[in-house]
Image (cartoon, rainbow, N blue to C red):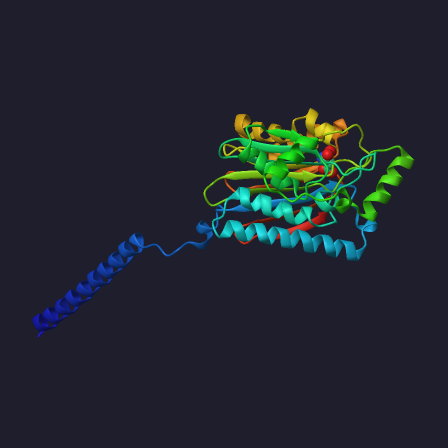
Amino acid sequence: MKTNEKSMKSVKNDKIVKRGWMVLFVMIVVGLSGCKNPAPDKSAVSVKPVYAIAIHGGAGVILRENLSKELETAYLAVLDSALTVGEQILAKGGASMDAVERVIRIMEDCPLFNAGKGAVFSHEGYNELDAAVMDGSNLMAGAVAVVRNVKNPISLARKVMTNSSHVILSGKGATEFAREQGLEIVDSTYFFTERRWMDLQKAIAKEKENKFGTVGCVALDKAGNLAAGTSTGGMTNKRWNRIGDTPIIGAGTYANNKSCAVSGTGHGEFFIRYTVAREIAALMEYKGMTVRKAAEEVIINRLKPAGGEGGIIAVDKDGNIALVFNSPGMYRGMANSKGEHKVAIFGDK
Ligand code: ASP
């Protein structure tokens, strides 16, 4: 009896051990197959954006109390739609340079910004436009200055880059080149807006130069190429065919696949003397700074104490974006493949 009980017990034990091995075997198989085919880790997928874009519509003394609710809504709406157009180009695999040009053309055609249609007046009562683009993949660049009759100076800057052997063209020669390239030429009255004309009268009365409202765009595309573009009417009441930082490569506009793409806005003379855009790229390249740290170093720590008001937008080769300004506000926006998309005006939002 006892022996029988013993043998039954041992059979039972055998069964338990066998079942244990089976469970272990199944666990190992499941575990191994799990190693071969890991479930998609959503947090890992979203670490680095495959494309990114930032825009600005000028920096300056932009305070909530000075901007009507209607104007604020109008600015945010244009920023948002321009940003969305750029984002869609990049999402479809389009080139960063195409996104930059398209976005800036939209802002040039909008009278709210100091570029294209809404450009400010010079002391002599002209609208003299500056613009530049730079391709970070090959360091090619194109720029135009003191252009009075070209509807979209950003497209002319791009033509200078791709269809001429020069980097900067100016004045009548630039317009002649635009005509040859088949770009739209407009009568100078196209650029007349009441708002900017009144700004000039006020600036003349105060014997001051004013700025703000320049537009810019920087982008990283899916191929890993960076591009930057900036377009402006310059400073209200500027004289003697003054040229600002916008068309000066390395001052108001710069792009290099090794570091970042930058577009600036603010008091141009300071941006030229502090080679703002290139300085940010150089701090990244030689000192290993992040794009945000580099931008803060230049805009906050160097430019501000010197009296240079303004800001920049930048995107680096990994899709990180910096929107940095030392003025009360900057019309701005950013979007990327991670689904981030926002526009803002004031210092706090
Ligand atoms: N930077 C431009 C210039 O000095 C002006 C601006 O950004 O508002 O021409």
